Amino acid sequence: MTQPTDYPSIAALGKALRDRRVSALELATDALQAVHNGPDPHLFLHVDDALTLAQARAADALLAQGKAGPLAGIPIAHKDLFVTRGWRTTAASRMLADYVSPFDATVVERLEQAGTVSLGKLSCDEFAMGSGNENSAFGALQNPHDPDRVPGGSSGGSAAAVAAGLVLGTTGTDSGGSVRQPAAYCGVSGIKPTYGTVSRYGVIAYASSLDQAGPLARSAADLVPLLDTMSGFDIQDSTSLETCNGVANAPGRITAAYDHCRGLFGSGGGQPLAGLRIGVPREFFGAGLATAVADAIEAALRVFESLGARRVDISLPLTRLAIPAYYVIAPAEASSNLARFDGVHFGYRTPQYQDLPDMIRRSRSEALGPEVRKRILVGTYVLSHGYYDAYYLQAQRVRRMVANDYRQALDQACDVIMGPVTPNVARRRGDHDHDPIADWLGDIYTLGANLAGLPALSIPCGLGGPAKHLPIGLQIIGRHFDEGRLLALADCFQQHTDWHQHTPRHVA
Ligand code: GLN
Image 1 (spheres, rainbow, N blue to C red):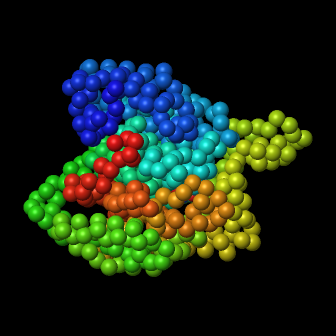
Image 2 (cartoon, rainbow, N blue to C red; image 1 turned 180 degrees about the vertical axis):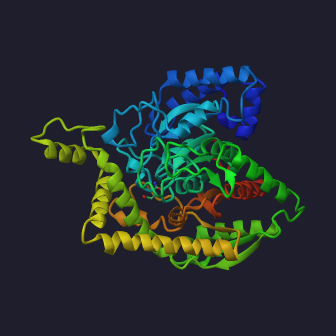
Image 3 (cartoon, rainbow, N blue to C red; image 1 turned 90 degrees about the horizontal axis):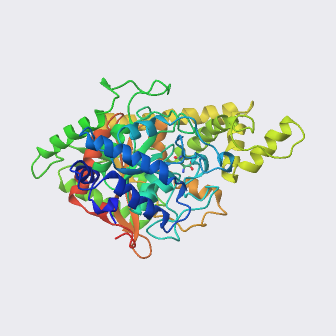
């Protein structure tokens, strides 16, 4: 059987496909079998062999014509928040349990045009609200490194599928950390680009001013062609960017910037990163950070220093306030976005009701899960007359101040910011069942990049937990549109370390 993980990288598998040493069809056939035999029955929410094999045949046709790009024939899968023709799109909610979209999200369409082969739709937290993938209406997921632990959320399925070796890349979305946090917990690489880089068209909206899609893969090098294909201006998304710092936001931008930075790093000899200033926010290392995580980040920073980078102590004083600001703004936007699920336009409708208001109330109460209902209530409250100024407006002010702190640090003190992704390794499943706020606190290091719209990635940098078997993530945050540099830095780290090659025991 040929597995995607038999190849060290997307580039290597892409070459094998172009050289016709393996066909997209045999790869997809074997990958589907692995998906059907996978240890976690809840990982995929919809698999359709016929649809996957049709894409594989199309990829083989592209390859036969010699027209194939770097992603032709590469097995991937999508978070079930991206709408797809053919495959159901549920957002892991009973509300959309049977929903099939009449169109593809721009991201899905672009990846398909590039010849990728989708194995189906991956579970996530319901409407992307959560940190452990336990909010899916269709069953909690396992972390491939330890089935008793969560894979993270909300793109938990996207991280777990890569870690389990089922696919080489996945799509995820990140409104407050949902690509980076599960990437960290599952020991894979993931990037959230600058807000506006990737089209949100066809991504089921959670918090529109924060939502941004990004890929997950085993290494930074693998993220490059995925992000490049996903990104680019899209007229269908009003917040999509036409240009980035004077450069067109078009496919090719990420690869060009990445290659440029790698060239610069390559010219530095034994000190490839000479001149690079790494800002290390002291607020990221306070109470609550597990020792194993702090130690792993320290060790990673020493690797960067040994490559010539300089470490700069910086302050992001409002770090703690990012949590209350996000948990006001995101629910406010969610309460508005989710108003469309009313039993009339989309999705579930209760079978028994007295009148229209009763039908709407019952449909929403029966089909939306507790976390989603909680956020709709919070959001409706903070937007209501009399509380708007006290909560929503105040949160917007804090958001601007948090963004200013990041801007000041990145303008004046450093080129990139590094720190942990999460305060701890993946928690046990069910651990936060009785403490709704505990998960929210775990978002402390990731929210800032969303509030400020900055690009940020997570790469594996160590192991922790009782048996030293649970991955730890390093976060790198950059200036707007600096994805190429972030990915080149991450690649440089991965050239000198092998944390990204650590696979779960049953996959090895
Ligand atoms: N964990 C955060 C939350 O629960 C982030 C979610 C996200 O990025 N979609 O809202």
